[in-house]
Every structure is written in C-alpha cells, then in structure tokens.
Length: 162
Image 1 (cartoon, rainbow, N blue to C red):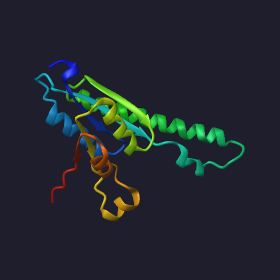
Image 2: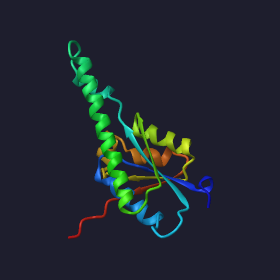
Image 3: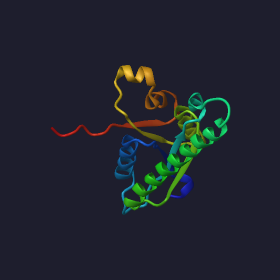
Image 4: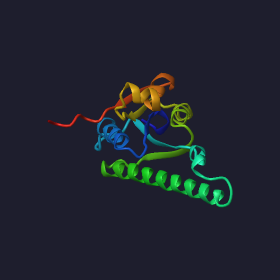
C-alpha cells in the first residue's frame, strides 16, 4: 500500500500517563513490527495558549518577561512530551511517525488536525473523570467524539489489580 493510500491515525498526547497509554495501545494494536503498516501515524500535541496564565502575571514592570517565561515553559513542556512520544514509538520499532504541535484549545486543535490530515481514526486517552469533573472541566474526548469527522477511540487505563 503506498503512502498516499494509507489511512491516517492521529494520536493525541499531552503530559499525562493516560495519553501515553493510548499511544502504546495504538502501537500494539495497529502497528505490528514485522509487517508493512496500513496506517500513517501522526502524533498531535495541543499547547494551551498562554492567555489563561496572563492573570498570574501582574501588569507593569516585568510582565513581558513573565509572559516570555510562561511561553518558554510551555514550549519546553511540548518538546518534552513529543520527545517522550517518539521514544515510545522507537521502543516499539516504529520510526515512521509524524508529529505536530499546535497552539490552542485541545478540542479545536484535534478536530482541525483530523480535517487537515483527513484522519480515519483519532485516538485519545481517557483521564477517567467522573460526571461532575467532566461537567466542570470539560472533556476533550467527549467533545471530539461528538465533533470530529472520523472514528474516535477513547482508551481507558486498565483498572489496577486487587
């Protein structure tokens, strides 16, 4: 199957173990190491805009330096997240992986990435929030399941053994 014929799987990653568990699940279930893969893997990371942090930065002297520090911290965190995702792929002998970092609300970033790459599947890790936390914080996976124009797979972490 040629590159242009391969279906695209997008995997959303953030700093959480939940997202890395979802990435490992995709690699184990869609990318057998001994065969030609029928999918193109793209890892997407959404960097939240520094705007919510502006309230933490006092207006006046030093505010631009503080904002730059927040932006640099977000960039370092994104680079670290992408590097960890690449290492996980490499540990499973998957080196043909594309990565993308976009700034914005993760819900919008992921839906836009699905459209941009014409993805067949979007895979996200579940944080396991209950109904109240989901209502207050919002659920990226719930939003994507209702708004993305592709199949959405939400991977839950395994329950701990008793």
